[in-house]
Length: 546
Image: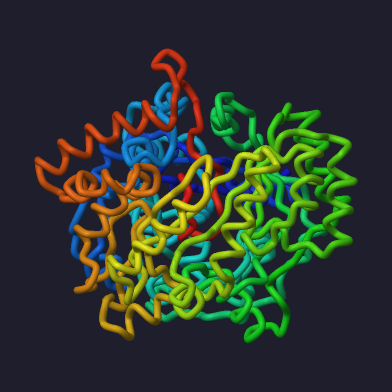
């Protein structure tokens, strides 16, 4: 076995997120080649002690931007309850909280493990946390590489951070292995594909992009590298041991708030190949078998932007394959993919909960700006079909799109009033690098082009005169009330929208009434009732996790 040691860093700012497949995949690939691997996961560390703040002003390529506000995402699960988007529940995360700063925890890990390479996977919303962590150990002079969607779609900013020596642009499976083998052998790695490398002179080597990996040739995830507590998630009254199973990578749709369309464009331009791929049923079955029999998984989180992106033949093949297990599972899809027949087949083999991206209720705005061209009647009928099937479902909504107004957002409220979702969400749009709406926001003058966006549970980073930051915050915290309470109560809710002491008082009273009326759960039986749903892949996906 090689003595070359790699420390993977997952800069997660919310203790509610599930195991990320990318980290588990990198660990397995490296271990299979004989490298020693360890993980630092910040999920259960005290980020308040790190004074972690989001730079929501003009964050320049060096990462030294104007600090404007504390990150709201740290209390995201609590915020979801306060905004009446999930039932009150007792999180398991608090009992696993590590009472030290994440920077202190990472420093201890580095001193104990003595890695030869630091490899960080980050989204845009966590990249500033990643930089703060790397800054705490920079004096050890260990080479660092940053990968993930931010490095792919904002490479100049990513390589500009002084804490970063290399970035991975695009997928990292081949690049990381090649890099480690070169470093372990003492060879030059200046020409490793997908890597940008910062030389001591300040020059940057920008290597070409290699073809997308064959997802059926990848090994099984190394889930065991994560702490035991990271496997669990509350779902409708029960705590499950939930693990991710990848079925698709990428997405065939072109939603403007998501980076998946840009992945397809990027890989077509760079390699001529498609980014969207499906794993074989045989591989999916093998993962489920292992996770069930070895890791005692009792709930499956199918990791796919659109799980229903199967042909009719593939859909039936999945149902036949999964009938062997019948474990409860969660997935996400689009309203127009739903039929009564599909819902029955999936329910019969274990579908427990399904999440939908609705995002906006105005048909024209949704078609022209959000790039989701289906009529409201299709969405409403789909949700009613799911309701009749007896499967739990959640509906994701986004407010604060470039050019949106408070009046347009009312259409999103109105369509949500026409069906009864088990859970709903309301997030504020973040124009992340790599999303088509990023360019729209910059071109319309709403966004400084160098801005690094926080999590979608944070405040808007855009300056939109027709839909201000305070208006967005007020609507997000009262969205579920507008949907569920009768319109005769809307004048009260309008007061609760206001970010004032009076607004806070009214909102608190309405929140208590909402819980008692619509969640209908006795005070003594509210643990783990309808807690945060699993993470969707898109960073803008308005779920409980990134």
